[in-house]
Image (tube, rainbow, N blue to C red; front, side, top):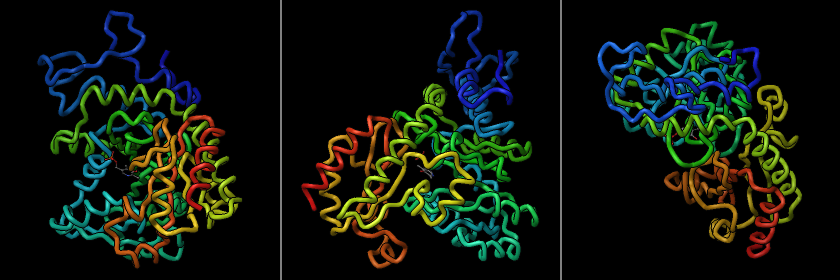
Length: 384
Ligand SMILES: *Cc1c(COP(=O)(O)O)cnc(C)c1O
């Protein structure tokens, strides 16, 4: 049986991406570690840079989970962004949400800028700024929601409606939510992109990226970029990611439940200045988050009432949260943006955009919430 739109998310995640077993009866697909294919084969493969059975399986399942007809997989989230941006040309304008992921900013600033691509950053959580899309009619609008690291929520449907009026494609980086919690194409986006390194694979054991769309022309451009720029993943990583996505629904339920419980508890603690989580009523875009997302994912931030050194000392005392970049794996991670992801941003700029010295970003895993809570409690007592 091939599951379709009438089947639920969990059923599709398990049953799609299982072909290419040949005559073996294998219940799960093998890994096709081959660089090339015999000419004239019935499945139409030629060379792994432009396609492989493991890519097709991953693309088929993630396309369905995103509510898309098609998807193209890449070696990493950054490769996926490179693929989309490589379709633009010199003097084209991109309007981007001002809190885009740091590597996306660096790609525009240090790479595509050299080729004459122009980028304007706007706070897209402010509907007043959407008029700029109508006025400037850019070649692409790029946004993320929730954003990194402050978890600002941006109105995807609202922005897509304005962009559609002037026929501007919208790319949504859906990494922080995952297609289980948020489906940008259903909200009007042209392209939904994920770093599968995070929630979709979910096990912190490989990198990957994917772009899903319902637009055949965009799909052709993505397939072209995969092969022309050499952005394809390893078949083994595509296989790992296909395995990871089978449990996405279960994992996201637990990530969201754990994060909500911890965020709600931390908000009540002395020594914690503030907590930000889209599914807490204290979040500035709480109502929008509830409309646009099924739950809040495993990410929340907290600002400790202490200097940067003490915040970092807190991170190092934790036993179950590893101090590391990245997010979305089964294991809990913690990151101190002022000394890690945003260390190169001058302190005054950092503070002006809300990256307080005591800011911590938690990526809550699927462990038992009670253990995570005790771990945080004990580490806090040692520093405050
Ligand atoms: C991690 C991440 C990326 C980059 O993905 P890689 O797989 O690390 O290349 C892009 N966007 C967001 C929002 C991310 O979190």
